[in-house]
Image 1 (tube, helix red, strand yellow):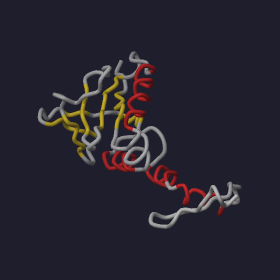
Image 2: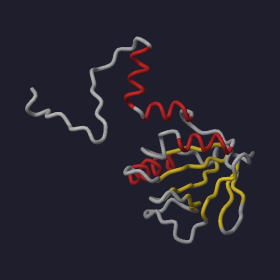
Image 3: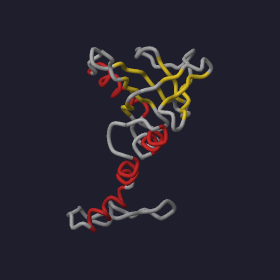
Image 4: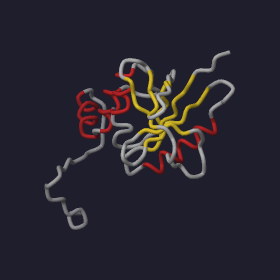
Length: 162
């Protein structure tokens, strides 16, 4: 029986890198290896993707091959060994920028590999909290009051304004 191959993707460039690793450890421990073949895809702080052979106490790509996407082919190739890695699905255990903002979801779409979770549009929209609130309001869904502030604008004095 062929087990579906799952690319467990974790790490990432965001400030939540370590949280992603912790979450991925829990997911990895919970996956039924009799039903799924799991491939470990680690994204380092610089955005490089690595193929790890195990989920160790310390996550380090030292000596691991780099994973390079092959757009439209449903696969990755390792560098420098040129091994083809063809997952059936990507399971992103990523947080924050370049993880749950639609970036990885868009890459999966270009790779032609299904991804667990929301698509690129929903992911990008939900990362933009103001856009999400505007869409909810436009569809008559109640939301709490909020204010938006842009970078460079002075922040309100919340302590003395009460």
